[in-house]
Length: 410
Image (cartoon, rainbow, N blue to C red; front, side):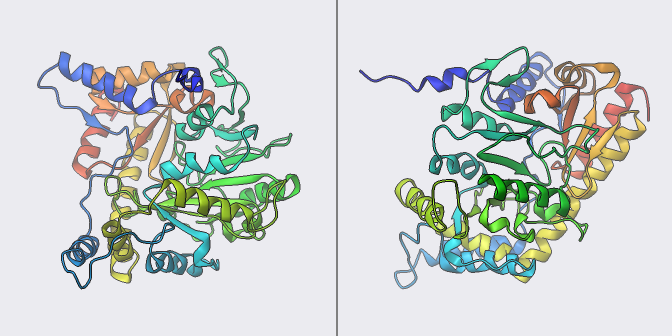
């Protein structure tokens, strides 16, 4: 008889963002006519830029002609798409072979799917708080024990606390880890790792034959030139790190779907030589995936053209300005705020020791603002909320004013 994957039953609760949507929907049904202002989920709101739209349109029109029609492309993405990505890395002093770049339908899938090329008993370490996908996919893959409701974490996963005391970037773990998830700029805290901080993890991974899974999906928001946008800016990182990135936030592709992963040929693990993990990821992608949409890749290439990059940078600047409005407005309201600089998220401490979900409910009920409770990102997220800068400017300003009014400070 067929049996289910019982690892799914270990999951503590519904995925964070559907639970937020459920509570917001219930409130809206009970209060018809009340407008909710959303600073919760990191979904973009600004339209695609003209150059990107032109690229998508041209890609679609090519399929309408027998002379230019194409069917299946390369499993790892069109060569010209990978060349465009490689050129961005080259500007950062990083040289990549095109066969090291794998274009996909988004970083979210890659960040979970990449685990499939590692052993089932690999020990996973995550920043705490962390993007829930890192933890939940580890649970689904059977790499964890049951959920400990007292500690708010899964047995078998190593949680690396990111607190105010360490600037929301973790210390290098003491024991031996196999897979280490790092995200910079960080979701949810908005903290950005320095070169020295990343170098400490590269040194650790090389010494312990561990692999860093580096999520750089928000790297386009880094404006400080002293901060690394890629872990490969750290010498030696290609031997111990896989980097995942996305067009979702940098070009507004949250619904369009396009991203990439870099699996260097220098990368090694405890039981394999250079080149093996690259070949395994190619085999995984060619078996489970026929490559990203050729139309979407045309839009992605347009986003990486000089014109597209200028337009997309202006879009990111708009979101960064929203982050500044949120950070400064909530600070005036008396909340301790972090992030929101070189990152699209603001991480705010709840007032008076209030729990994350209680403060979420208060802001939903009184300010009519949807946020994200920090506890949904892990035990170290308790006592904080995350606010997203991806709304429209007028809605962001209204939401901040409503929170200020609710807290009694303007």
